[in-house]
Image 1 (cartoon, rainbow, N blue to C red):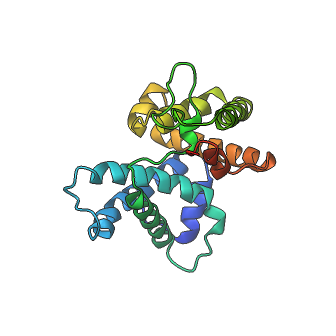
Image 2 (tube, rainbow, N blue to C red):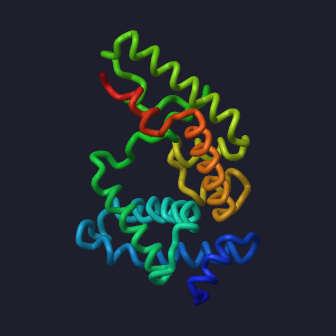
Length: 212
């Protein structure tokens, strides 16, 4: 694993090609090495949920780091900053009542993929609520169609809706894991900007699907 200064981490992660790929690989290894110790107070590494949690947290951490590179102020080691992000994400996941919470990704269903159980199937929903949900879902689909490339939509469906492991999704899409991270990173940024433009937040979207 290459040793880097704070400046080198930032430069490599903002670059393209082999430098970026190498830095992401190294960062992934650092996150996965540190999580067992950091989480041992709450979850044993022998717990069957542990390894899926590590994979989930690692994936989200790398995406979050790429999103927030400009917020790193250099007051600590870059890897320390990343580790804190990873632990916060992991503890948030552990606090969830369910293993996977409903998210915007789960609203990206298409004709070939059924909606997630419980999200759209509230038999007690009033006609007004059902109509509101239908309108919001149509709006989300329109945003996805207009903002994302076919590859970005495919990545969101495979990883967000179908919960496919990163390596398997990369093979299916005939790409590598780091390229898939970049694809997701760009997709998230585009969705974030579009939702803001339409004066929506992810929570606004989810609220329309809560039981009334």
